Image (cartoon, rainbow, N blue to C red; front, side, top):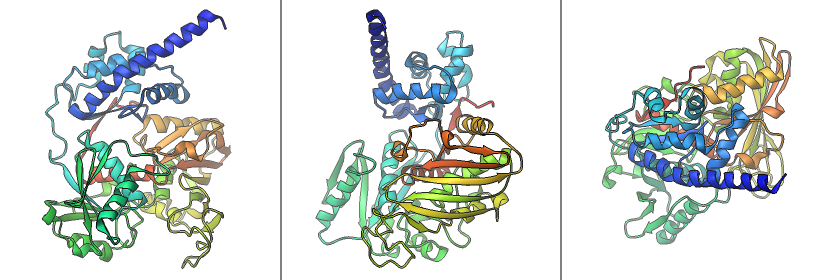
Length: 487
């Protein structure tokens, strides 16, 4: 390559960096002033670095086969800031591809047509226009990730307001507060908290990015009166796993100031088990206790639905290769469950999973068609589900992958299903992925009616994103989404 060519490539990179830098405050303005949540083929553009934005543009070619640069998206983002838009989710990447094909060079005119439902609707209110109080009961792995997501989204007017966390006190409460703050601030898997956290010792609270979060100490749900802290009509998100039936979770509803209870684990009995994107519309106003099912159920149900809708599933087996969890022992010790007493960081541990049976609660048409098992492995996060399926119709690997790629990009399940086609990805590459599951196209096997699909999932972060989506739905928080997929 000539020196002139080398200089040209570098200059183009610098030019793109400059545009990405100019784009960041525009994206922030759309988010905070107009409640416009921007993305690039499903990848969030909110609070991203210059390099992340450039990498996500490169990602488009891998999944869509179309070259896309910030030169294509910047004019659209800039025009959006001048249009007095109402709240919405806008995929700037998809709009940019469409604009390249039919935009005629006039970004504003193109957007006025594509976003006509929200143009001039800046004053439009989401839901009832009032933030919904949310309480986290428990502050473990899922509780702290939920806190991070809720705090992050508060800046864009997502209408869910984290008001309090409820925990058991451990000795010196001043020290306890500091430790809670430290665990939120630093995470060995997900990295540092994006922002600042201060501790208000006098009022027993954490202040995270301007969000004032009361820390309530209680040994039982019945010990709490939320109205004492000016918390009303709250959804209490129980992430302790201590109670999974109506009787146990009903304790939350007996508290003044709490109106609903939401469980971050599979519910028992008649509790609705919801996989957002699949059966969340089944939640009614009368449902006061709802479960978000398990991380594995959330990962596999969208992919199973996509496959069943198009090809039909006769039967299948789900094998979950799951990261170890806090339920296991660090070293060999007594555990009431079989095998789980053995050291989690040192062993693969064969155990059971209810995910296969739980699928039927979200997809009744698959009841009795799936079996399942699980292997806990020595990694702290990111798991994989292996779906070994027998279909009604034959399909080859290329056709199956192409179908799942289109579902991941252009279907209503685009936030649930992600798609990757790389021979080099490993589990750590999916830490922080916000989808319920990620189809690994390189691993797909198809032989007539027999197929095997490999689905990665961040069993902490991806699942927590699903929980937040369900909470938004229960709180009547909804966004129009653009562009309207026409596939």
